[in-house]
Length: 254
Image (cartoon, rainbow, N blue to C red; front, side, top):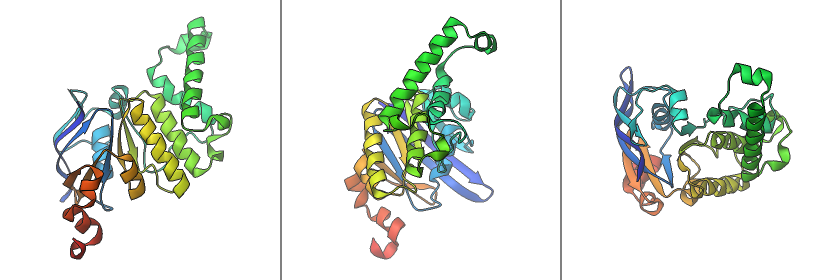
């Protein structure tokens, strides 16, 4: 079953075509990796999918609905949540509080219920804290709940960002270079976490330059070069594709 479908998605910046008529289907309950050299258009494509930019042409269809041009908050509420290349945490909040913020996308309540601390509000707060602690345990940060987010090591901050994104209960999680800056051991733990996310029922689409992470994690790989999709398929097939080899290493290696 197709969860996300890109149909002729195009984005131009003046005379530069950053994303050129991309067709891509992301199937439910798996991991798809989007790779390509620097400047290939990967992050721009993520921005178009998640509503931070609007295509000049084409459609983005998520869970059967056309979400092209919708604002990011509406897309997130529909179940499509993303992370960014640079870690974007609430540095002055605790690790637990960062994840609790993500949980509140799906909670109800208003100003007066929060001010009066009604029984229903207290119950929601207990449920949110329980959910946040479960997610921190899932990514291996259960021992850091009371620490400030700023005190975590960089690899731990990446995992915290993923936990916060999962708190929003996404159907599709977009991860933008989650292994950037990680050590080899941290990257292995990240690969394990991403596979576990997919096994728990959340589809994952990731941009990644670490080929070990890509090959050990992805079910399907799509390759961009100069804004165009040049290959798509399982890791073993894509790895041997002459066009992919040429894009990364130069025509002489193809």
